[in-house]
Image 1 (cartoon, one colour):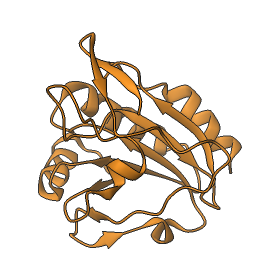
Image 2 (image 1 turned 60 degrees about the vertical axis):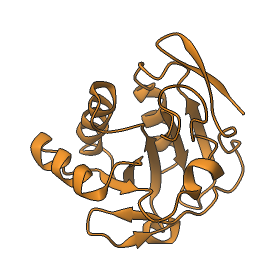
Image 3 (image 1 turned 45 degrees about the vertical axis):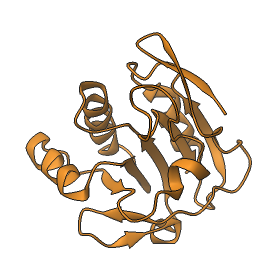
Image 4 (image 1 turned 135 degrees about the vertical axis):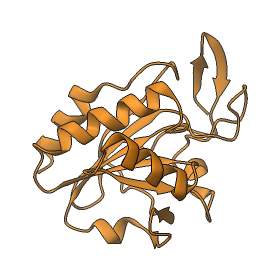
Length: 169
């Protein structure tokens, strides 16, 4: 269990992020086309998992925009923005914001991702949503970088995540 904060108040998560050097747990998440996907659907690519509480918040929207902008300069890297938002809301958000280089994925049908990756918030006003975190996987789905953002209202360390992704190419 990790302790993070929301506006300075302690929040517990369901666990800890997968350890660097370990194989990433597979998942079943739902895309904006309502098709379920897992790690095999992104085989051969470096993956940046941009995990957020909800795209309907300013900081989450900012991280989606920042990773979308960075994606233009990354070859063979896919950025997966993962939340518990419905796929319809994710799609609307991306269309309204002009976000077209990241893949949004939802825990619509399977709520195990948050538990397996240790990012489900279990206390605090946002309990039930995912905490803000970034996990970078190499082409073989080995974890090469993690960041559990310590304060939900803060943006992740984009530079370190992008550098880890580039090194994994």
